[in-house]
Image (cartoon, rainbow, N blue to C red; front, side, top):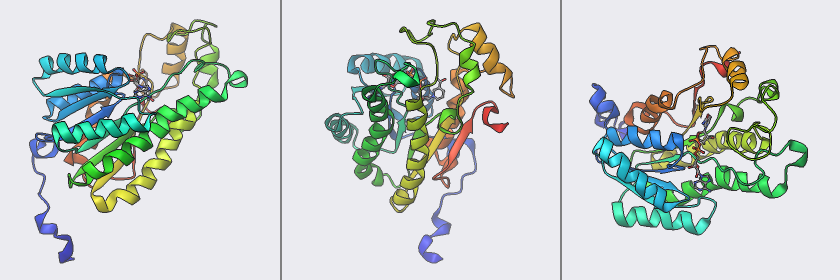
Length: 286
Ligand SMILES: NC(=O)c1ccc[n+]([C@@H]2O[C@H](COP(=O)([O-])OP(=O)(O)OC[C@H]3O[C@@H](n4cnc5c(N)ncnc54)[C@H](O)[C@@H]3O)[C@@H](O)[C@H]2O)c1
């Protein structure tokens, strides 16, 4: 019992103690994405130094400056394609060299290669592999390459951003109501939720549980954040159907996940690992 040293565990008494990230350093991969940017803002405002990492380095740098001017925090933008072993290795080398520590990693990547929305019968192996390479293998590479640095933290946190479609199958009828060939994200294919996305996001849930048991002794926590769909200008028919099926009666807005990311990264969740925080307006409660 004494070996654990319970009396030395700091008692968390105030919101300041619980959520303060001052002095901590974290990387968000997929950080230039819509959700990634929101995460960067919140975590920066909580005191963390945040690295925004995404495929286009210039965009990451510009975003880092933009967020710095609104939060007053210190951010860094670095280019990294997480499907490349070399680039992921270089990313964490640079974090080590330039920032000297790593306390959290948020994997918020969503790869959408050519052919992403093609129908299941015509889905190519190449597209399938690229989605898994970014969403699932990319997360594996980031976790593997960051372990050395994170174990030095003594209180590190990995958050894998999944999706309701990693938990439950899509209600295909909702997509059936959308106007054919009017995909809000572009391209000739009908809007839908591809199987490659579901497989990659479901894979993250199993991987997080595996990694939680492996990295517990290193004091690295590993959890999943499972968001529901965010309103992003989708067409009326889709929106109506989505809302009808959601107990809270609306889609999410980006900031609906701000509290969750701060909770998962900070000491607020320091006794939580291998878990899945589902924030979906009740979508999976039926
Ligand atoms: N938007 C939603 O409605 C929603 C719902 C549930 C879950 N999610 C999850 O939230 C996360 C963020 O989604 P978003 O809405 O911000 O999407 P987004 O497309 O705006 O962001 C995803 C980011 O991932 C980056 N990316 C893609 N491949 C990459 C690679 N190989 N290496 C590095 N970066 C890569 C993209 O450049 C992009 O900036 C995703 O994991 C997604 O599955 C989103």
